[in-house]
Amino acid sequence: MAHDYMGLHTRLLFAVLASGVLRVAQAAQPTPDPSRLYAPCVVCHQLNAWGTSDGNIPNLAGQQKHYLEKQLARFRSGARVDTAMQVVAIHPTISNQSTDLVALATYLSRLDTNPHPLAGSGEHLQAGLETYTHICAACHGADGRGGEGSSVPRLTGQHYPYLRRQIEAAAELHKELSPPEMTSALRGMPAPAKDALADYISRLGTSEALLGGSSTDRESLRYIR
Image (tube, rainbow, N blue to C red; front, side, top):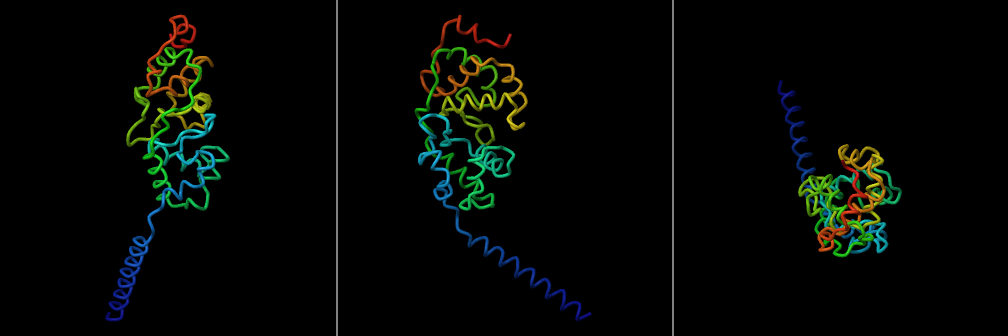
């Protein structure tokens, strides 16, 4: 009986010590340096995270944190396919620990967003406004800032070419990553309406977003009856 008690006591002691060592090791882990984590991204997204001047690489600055976390995890797992992003997501600088993804997403979300994203032609902004109000504003907000604390992305400050490409990708179900209500609305939309929508979104937060085209323009682009 005494032998059993001593054995149990020894096992409990080892468990307590192991737990203490683990807590010390966790406490000793350095806090991730977000600027270092972002270093592999600079070559494409630029130092200020505003994307490229041609508008093909998106602005990440000011993006919603939870959306960034989710997309980084999807790129890393391969659920969202983009060769360059998948290479970056598994870069040795960014470890497999979720704390790194959270730190990187938090860093980007706190940067000042691009005040002058590349816009479209500006020819059919009223049609873009009507489309955005009808199918996008409920989730992304009238101002396009997305859902605070949610995975709904911020659209304000984003480039027209990137938006146009993503609208097309969402219409093609984007590997089933986009909400079905959004893809169903975009799938039957004609190309000119997609152009107008992307153009309007690229101007959200500016006075240009309030400008509109003629009633003829609006009727020619209307796709919802």
